Length: 54
Image 1 (cartoon, one colour):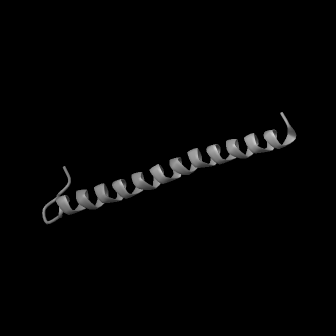
Image 2: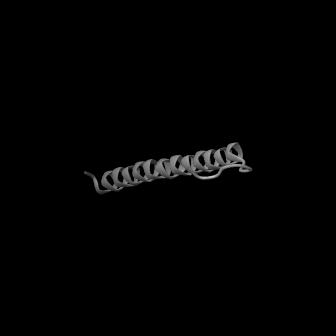
């Protein structure tokens, strides 16, 4: 069993949890960008097809 005397375990857990929450927010932003890009490309394809008369 490691010696944990004098260590601020709660502080370490809070720091880890805060980093996890921050990273999760970044993933949500990135996933949103992917969906936005797919939507934009679809709109561009629809406009290009309409301009060609398809």
